[in-house]
Image (cartoon, rainbow, N blue to C red; front, side, top):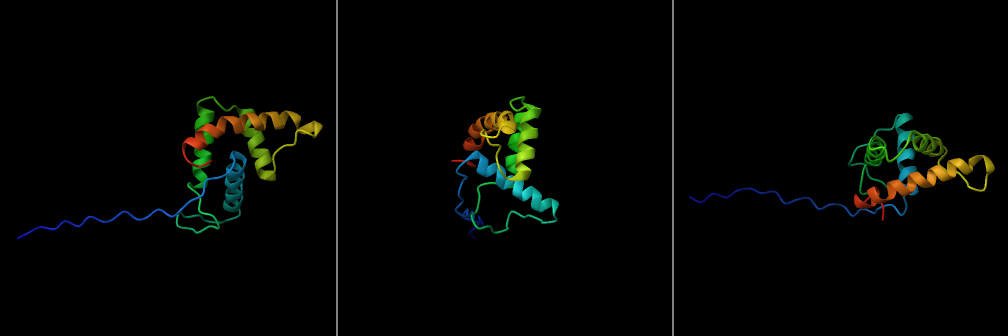
Length: 122
C-alpha cells in the first residue's frame, strides 16, 4: 500500500507595489491611523486600490525600532506626528517651519534605508 502525503501548494502572493518615497509611506500610515481612531477596522485581507507590501503597523514598527536604537530622537517623533496629522510635510519656505523641515528631512533620511531593505519603499 502506497502512502501519499498531502502537501499544500503555497498561495500566490498578490502583486504589491512599494511606495515611491518614505513620505508617501509615512502619510499612508498616518491616514490609516486616523481611520482607526475614527473606528475603522483593518484586516490583512482588506482590499485596497493599490496592494502594499506591508501593513501600516510595519511602518510604525520601523519608527519605533529606530527610536529605541536612538537613531531617531523625540524631536523627530514630534515632527513626524504633528505633520503626519496634517498630512503634509513642513515647508522650508515658511520661516516658522524651517526647523521642523530640517528635522523632517533627517527623519526621512534615517527611515529610508530601513524601509527600502524591507521592500516597503523603492
